[in-house]
Image 1: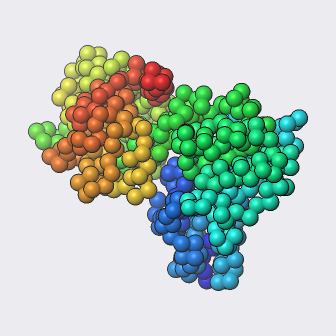
Image 2: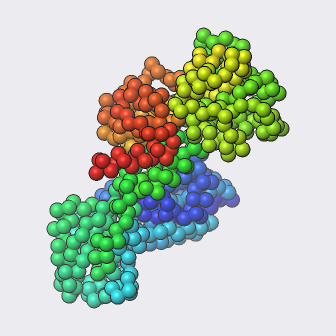
Image 3: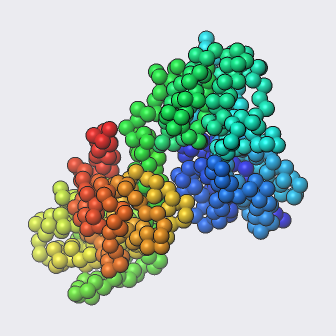
Length: 563
């Protein structure tokens, strides 16, 4: 048996344009063979256990030759019997994508394959620039043309490669006379290096020199740029505006509609790439908000949380200087001994209830007990389980929660703190009658794959979800800086984290602020995250309220001022 190869079109760049079928396959793939221009956000959708193989091509430099790519697909199909091998290609595999060549190679080797079409840049990129490829009364047809061919007449991949030539246009075998007479929209994929030659040949064959043109760079990505020209000014415009690949050229009367219908550039976070470091299961909320505002979001969790394995008796971490009888393993039966349950994070809520249900209990064991939450985010998570909070401090911090409970409760009230293994002793100091129950543990992410390091290095901002994520981020980035990898040079950092009871440094002695990472700006929820950011040399701005909506609002306000 051999594995099955899926030729998947990743679309032009925006991860939202990947098909549901493509996403489904990537999530279960054993191997992902991907091209250079596949969005990092799409790579983030891949099975985290998949073997990732970069075969990307750049102008004038092919990392892996096409013949070698063909061979690799067959090799992986043999190495993974019954497995899923994803060949992830920019745009659509069968639109100048050489997917046909790869499919023929698979047929010859007896490897089963499936084609998953993608949205081609020929129609999606103009749409993101507000240019319809057809429009009643202007263009009733559109034509997709390769702007570059190899010497043997084969086309290059429009999403990957545009080799420069000492003699631009020397390899083109286009029927310029027919194209010049065509009344519809002409769309050239690749061809920026040859466009001056193409424009001159079209004019020589009778096409109007005043025909509108648009060059669209890096379409549908945060870095999309549209440059307008006419057929007679094409070459000089490319040189003056430094138009570079990847870019498409769209030619015809529909181009003028782009001045009225452009919508992408008007989104408040258009052109921004943000790295979200929240744990994977928590990142979707803020990712959706930021994406809707035009940002490209790279989910890069720096910590992982997991409920501890034993549902009935859960060991706790003994903190230095604390009495063991206040930090202990507790069974669910012992909940009857407590008057108040205090949750300091959404992770604590999820872990507690997961273990509660697994042990055969339900929410009735909480009857008659008071419930406290460190802040609105944790309060909202409790409400998902049908639990309303009795106490939420105005200051959404561990210290704020401790002072609130200390001011309201009589001395003999018995308080149970549901926390993680990295929580500090802030609440225990403020509440002498409290006992800690460690219901989950936080594990640092040790390293980032190469493609994610490159994405982070090219980002405009980083979003942190907790102080532990801050510490681990700095530790990981510093390790790559030490090894000579590219750090986050000159970028900004956005921080978010509902301050719970705090966290210990993961490796305080080894952390310093890499000089190349400064200056960076941090947007924070809560003083503890802000403090962690400043400790590592970041400038900070704190959201008005301790909610994700308030943070997003602050991000938008910042970039509006910047523009």
